[in-house]
Length: 244
Image (cartoon, rainbow, N blue to C red):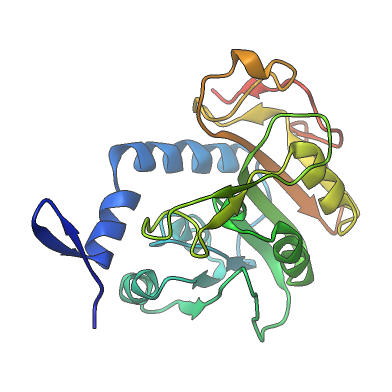
C-alpha cells in the first residue's frame, strides 16, 4: 500500500511529496550548481562503472548515464526506489541502506555520494563501506560544520521528510574529520580549489561568523591513483574561490 501524507485536509502520496521536495526550485538550482561544479573538475569518469548512493529520485544519475557509464543506482526509501525503477528501466536500481550497508557487488571505478553522508547517524561505517566499494575515485559532497578539530556532530532530522535522514539522525562532521578519515582509507585525497556557485558553499572557512545561517557544504575527491589537476588541492584549504 502506498503511504499517504495528509496536508491541508488533502492526502498526497509519499512519492508525490518526494517528487515535490526534490523538484522544488531551490533543489533544482542546488543540483545544477553542484553538477556544473563537478563537471568543471574534469575528472575522468566517462565509460566507467559507477555506484551512486542515496540517489533520491535520480537527479544526479543522468550525469553519469550521459557519459556512457555503467551505473548502479541505490536508495533506501521504497517509494523513491519505485520511482527510480520507472525512471531508469534499463539501469541497475537497488535498495541500499547506508546506515547498515550491504551490497554483494565488486568494487566500482567511481563512487558518487552527493548529499547523503550528513543524513546518516554513522558516517564512519558509511565512509568505510564506500572505500571498500571503490577501486578508483570517491566523489563526496556533504554538509559540514565549521571548526579546526576533527569532530562528528550529530543532529536530529525529520524521518517524515523524504529529503532527510531515514533513521531520524544525521551528522555534520568537520572538514578536518572528513579529510583525516578519507586519508586513512585512500592514498590520495583532494579538496577542489573552487566551490559550487551557491550560497551554501563557504569560501572562507576561518570566519564562520560571516557565513549566513543555514547549511555549509564541502566537496572532496578521494582516489586510489594520483590525479594531476590545477583545480584540486592536496591540503585542506582555508579559502576557496567561487566556480564561475
